[in-house]
Length: 176
Image (cartoon, rainbow, N blue to C red; front, side, top):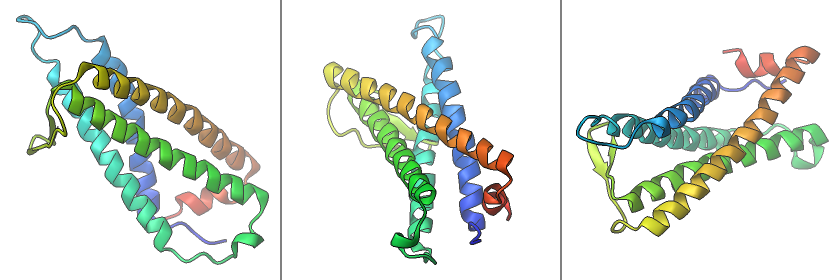
């Protein structure tokens, strides 16, 4: 059984922890009161959320690049139905990760708030503040994130299934 590269294993773990943090931080930041003279620290959790989202985007790009650069041992026709389903699951996860990141960035661009990359420099805003487009991209961001959570739940369920079955899939993934 072909093993997964150590880079992929580490990125998978970092991606999983980062996405988990993004969901937790989104609930936290949206529960904070609006900025006022008394409460001025609302920007920190939003910038942290954006920075981790940008990092998730980069992790996903590296994971896809790593996956595409590896040579497959079997021909596409020789793959089992379960292997094809696994590939489809991964494809949907990557599409949703990119959709979440891109719509989050677009929402931020149209909100009028700058997106700082780890407090080093600002990403460009592609346009002026636009409340309607901010709301649109924010709504799409929320729905793609909930969809991602649903697909990740299926992904985790499959991992639990393989762990219980003890068929070697988990060892293939996590053995560095």
